[in-house]
Length: 261
Image (cartoon, rainbow, N blue to C red; front, side, top):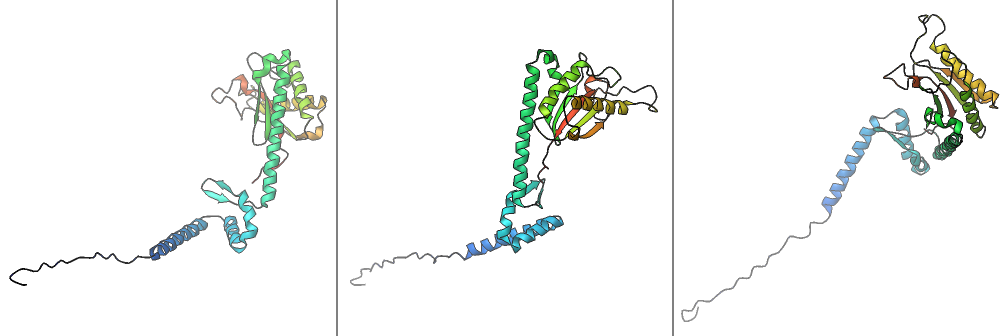
């Protein structure tokens, strides 16, 4: 200080931030996530069947050769199943099944068109049920209060039923698929307490009557794969076992190719 004056001292503070922390924590986090994923994979594998475990092991042994099979992996419920066939084989089966479904749907449309264009069958359109099921295309001739296809209690086809089967047969000749014919009845029992002729015999006899009619119209007997009689064990109307809709004949055009697995 000079002459009693105070010197003013100015102190400048410089804030210095710490150095960059670097990416070490990111590497550690990535390692942790990888370890957790590996743990989950191990726990998942422990819960799978032997076939899945072998396929997973096959991937790690030969990931390049196994990559094509990944295309055909199918998820079923909470598990994953790997096909035993090659991916190309599975894809080919899928494509063949699609073509078959298109062909069977085209047949269904053709039958509907044939019946619609024939005035004689205009009142029967509601009694012809067609749908794609696991086995193939199912065509059902369902009886009603207004129209029945068999004489009551017998396997004798009525004239309109024979004409209807002839139209169906004309469409069957266009494809080589095997045929299944099923007979169904309602729950009205015979009076013999099951000791004699029953609905089982009647359902089989009606299925065979439809088979004979198709063969007479030109269907090759070699096309018939099965004839089944279910009696009243496959009711359409489960709430009313005596309903006439339970009386029917089903014709199933089977898929020619095996379903892809």
